[in-house]
Amino acid sequence: MAERAARGAEAERKVGAILEGLAPDWHVLHGVWLGHGDIDHVLVGPGGTFTVETKSHGGYIPVDQIEERMLRQAYAESKVLKKVSGLE
Image (spheres, rainbow, N blue to C red):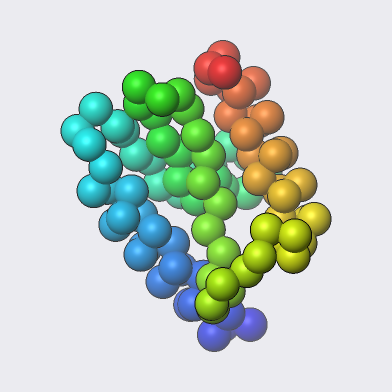
């Protein structure tokens, strides 16, 4: 369990560093707590507002093999952010 948590934290740091490299008109928030766990990353910029859920699975994962629970988690996070922020 500890190894899995450490791997997940490292993946979040790596994704966070990539997101920080976006153009200056993008704003990135990390580890946003909204009461039911955290959203790994929130992006706000000219293209809209996005939640980014990071997973630490290695290699290529075809779209048709993404686990439904991961999609439900990402969808739920976006709905919570929309509710508390009023942003679309």
